[in-house]
Image (cartoon, rainbow, N blue to C red):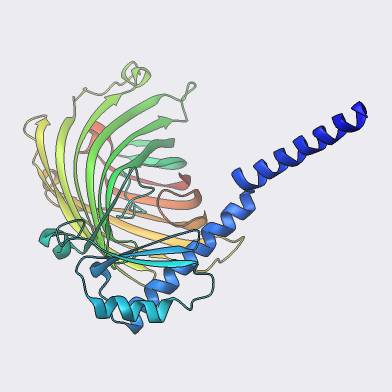
Length: 374
C-alpha cells in the first residue's frame, strides 16, 4: 500500500510539473504563433478603421495582446465607438474589444509632432536607423574589409582597407506612417589602410570618427543631420619608412546635413558639410555631397540582391573638383539597417584621397570588398 501511495503521489507530482510547464512556460512555437496572430489582428483592425471607417492614423492608438484589442481615442465620439464595435466584434480570433478615451492632452501628439508626422509613440534603443547608410560613401561607419590596387603620383601598391563602425539607436519617436519617425543615435567608426607590398603590411593611416546623428523619415523622404568629430593618425612603421611624410595633425568637428528621396528601388541624395574647430586651422570648411543608389527587390544569383551606388563629393579645400566613389555587387540577408546582412562589392574611386592627412593628394584605386551589417 505504501508503494502504491508513493507511486500515486509521484504521478501527481509529474502531472503538476507538466501543467506548470504548459501554462507558465508556453512553447516557443506557441508564443511565436500568438505574436503572429496579434500582428495579423492589429493590421486587419487598422485597415478596417482607416480604410472603411476613414479614421485618421493619428486620431487613435491600437494595441493587441493575446487576441485582446484596446483602442485608445484622443477625443470622445460615441458614433465612432459604436461604428468600431459593429465592424470589429465579428472578427475571427478577436477575443475582446475595449475602446477607451483619454483627455486631449494625455498621449496625443502635440502640434510639432503632428507637423512632423509623428504618432506620439516612442521606443528606447531601437533597431537600425531611419536614414539608410550610404552604399558608396568611403567614410560611412561600417564593418568591412577590402583589397585594392592603389596608385597616386609616383606610387603604386596593393592596399588593404578595413573599417569597424556602426550606428546605435538611442531613442526613436515613431511616425504615423509605417517605417517613419525621428531618431537620435550615436555613430562611430575606425577606417584604416595598410600597404600589403611591405614585409610587415605597414599601417598607413587610421581615421577615428564619433558623432551624434539625428535622422528623420516620412514616406520616401529621409534626412540625416549629424555632428561628428574626426581625428587621423599615421602608422608608426609608415613614419619610420625610407621617405616618411611630413606629419599633419588632422582633426576637426563637422556638421552635416543630407536629404534623400527614394522611388521604387532608386534613391537620390544630396547635402553638404561644414568644418568647425579644425586643425590645421587654414582648412577651408565647406563641402558638397550627393549621389545615386539602386537596390533590387529580387535576388539575381545565389539569393543575392543586386545593389549599386555612386557617391560624389566636392571640397572647397581642393577648389571644388568632384571626387567619385562607385560600389556595386550583391547583398545577402536582410536589407534593412540593423539586421544581419553581407555584401560582396566591387569598388572604384578617383579623386582626392578621402582618408587622413592626404586630402591634397590625387589618388585612384580599384578592388573588391566584403561588407557586414549587424
